[in-house]
Length: 361
Image 1 (spheres, helix red, strand yellow):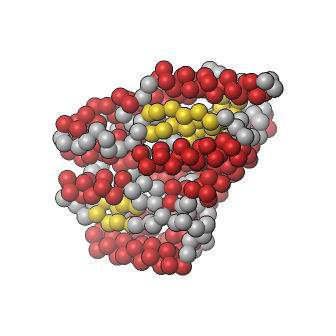
Image 2 (cartoon, rainbow, N blue to C red):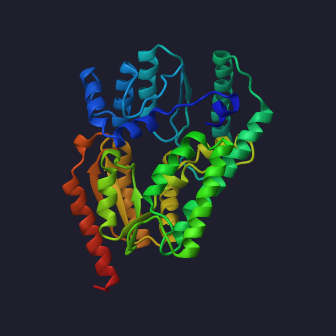
Image 3 (cartoon, rainbow, N blue to C red):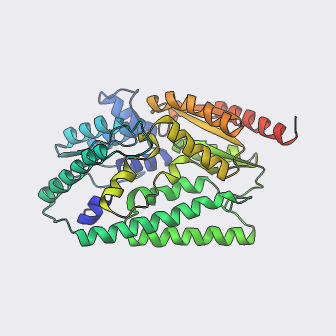
């Protein structure tokens, strides 16, 4: 995000657009349109929505401009590569690729930094050629300062879940996270996150919360939100007094760095790009810091590889934190792959275990 922001290039995110379309009820329609065009039902629902939108260029739920080029980074999801390759082919536009290798270690090696930095520099050169804009180191310093200022406020805000009760409803994080993904290098984003932090601080001081129920239990939610069923998933927890106080995807987008090289290192250390042990330990820390009593895992149909290793990671998190774990099958954007009854049954079971533990049974 910092590269196009420095160059003054407006950025649109197909993934965020797909989430918006799904949340407003258009996911099934566009997924079906993609399937009618020959794309498999087995590929990512976000990708299907995006590829269908690229053909029509219009959706009443969430319009956005079609791109002049695509800038792809695979540090979280390798599906992005084929998704963006198809967008580039369908729209006959250039694709710029940033390949972030999987990191089996705890730190980013000099070799990995050099490999990724070379791609960042090549991407800047390509963008200069495509747009006619020129890179400004002075402007990058401003963007970097804004990004880090935004991230510090965001991380401070999310960390306030350590208080009991939490001053916010964890589902708020999924909404505010969009700003962190798309705009954290802007001054306005920093101001917005600082305002959010002040709101949460004030809620804590007054004993208030954006969670509109008595907080009886606290859980970590793992996996992407089921956007078409977000109200149902949130209500299913709130009705039982369960607050989702933390999720790895919130803090994953808070980057605090002091140089171009360290920005790259931060990108190379997001949870899905590092080894299972380090990724697990990040989650264990969130559970412990925020006094989590249970873990609810969305086994997302669109994320098959992730779902495979997450099954084992969830077991390890539950064991390390001595908390119960429940999972449910679903999809982040295709409502045809979500059963509200199954979800409710799994949440009910998780609730009963947490309640029995509190009662000492």
